[in-house]
Amino acid sequence: MHKIHMKQDYKPVAQPQRRLNPTMKEVVRKEVTKLLEVVMIYPISDSAWVSPVQVMPKKGGITVIYNEKNEVIPTRTVTGWRMCIDYRKLNQATRKDHYPLPFMDQMLERLAGQAYYCFLDGYSGYNQIVVDPEDQEMIAFTCPFGEFAYRKMPFGLCNALATFEHCMFAIFFDLVEQCIEIFMDDFSVFGSSFEVCHKNLNTVLKRCVDTNLVLNWEKGHFMVREGIVLGHKVSQKGIEVDPAKVDIISKLPPPISVKGIKSFLGHAGFYRRFIKDFSKIVKPLSNLLLKNNKFDFDNDCLQAFELLKSKLVLAPIITAPDWKIDFELMCDASDYVIGAALGQRKDKIFHVIHYASKVLNENQINYATTEKELLAIVYALEKFCSYLVGSKITVYTDHAAIKYLLTKVYSKPRLIRWILLLQEFDLEIKDKKGCENHVADHLSRLVNEQVTSQEEEILEEFPDEKLFAMSERPWFADMANYKAAGVIPEEYNW
Image 1 (cartoon, rainbow, N blue to C red):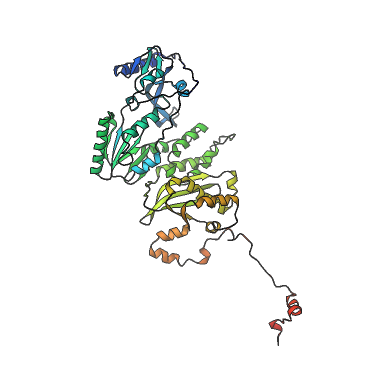
Image 2 (cartoon, rainbow, N blue to C red):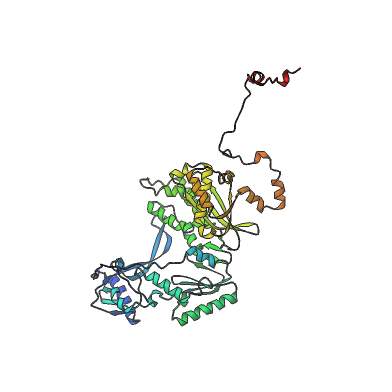
């Protein structure tokens, strides 16, 4: 049951209806008639809180069309109109419910690797939850056909999502993460085999019957090997980008405004965990968003735009973490970007779990090379902290001086803070070449052992950051030794 808790010192607001044209009025009339027929609303005339009706377009996904000049432009299609209630005044006076929502990436990782799936959809999920009778008059709305109040929870209330998630987890509390994942009104049932998935589906459906939870069978998919969940494709192989969404992005023309840049980066950034060096690739585009920068979509921006689209089309399959296996971090740093790849090694093959990258700020760009490499490790540990806490970690870096830097007694305060952070993890730092040798076969190792000293990596700093002492024998050394100790040089003895 949905309960509305009000803040103190808020007075009720009864707003007037808004003017609608005949087309929009017909949309409202049909919706009000439908809600009255299913007894979801009822007439009311004495409510202290009244909110107005607003008609909004139903927009489909982003697509591309050709204009009069035969140019490709991105757009969103309008598939219809929907009646909405403007509850902004009521929401301002409502105490917020901070019920936690599940993390999308963790849900996808739990779903990945399963053999069979069943995808279910709640039928008007919000409208299945009853509103407390004492609060029903507070969600009253006005339209050209009168004033009405909801018996069931409508869209637009600030705490509606939290209430719905709370109800779903209360119903499936013992099944979540075991055989089902829930995000809003989308239910994903899974199993390691056909029989297990079928058994889990029966358990979930029985729970729906017992709690009168209605599903939309037209949107259901049963006993499938893969499916689209939250914009990602999950299967036994792992997690992939949604081919339909990537296909649309790959057809987008170069943006011609700051708004177009923001839209493109927003769509591409949704899949940034699949793209290595994402921040480095998009830097020319991100520079166009800086304040007081002139919009100049030059050749560098065009190359970054096309490269990012090609990276999305060729995005790898991300695997889910195996919590019984140690984690590995591949870290690297360039002049203005640091990046990391989190993964695990199975059958001597490194499987990527997550890519991450970050553009350095003005101060960090001035760091020494060793400091940037260490900063990349610190960034990776903070970024993937939820994966790495309590696990064995092997960090690979191509800068051998870092291992010595961690053992220094006297360091900069910044380095000391980073070293203290690293001590919170059970990690081992190795040279990246050692990683390559580890996965190579026996013949490759024999060849690598014959590498000459000229091919070894040159250190950019002295190990102890001090100049080596250099001496030259003074011309008067022999005379001084003879006068002080009576020592005669050997070459003068006869």
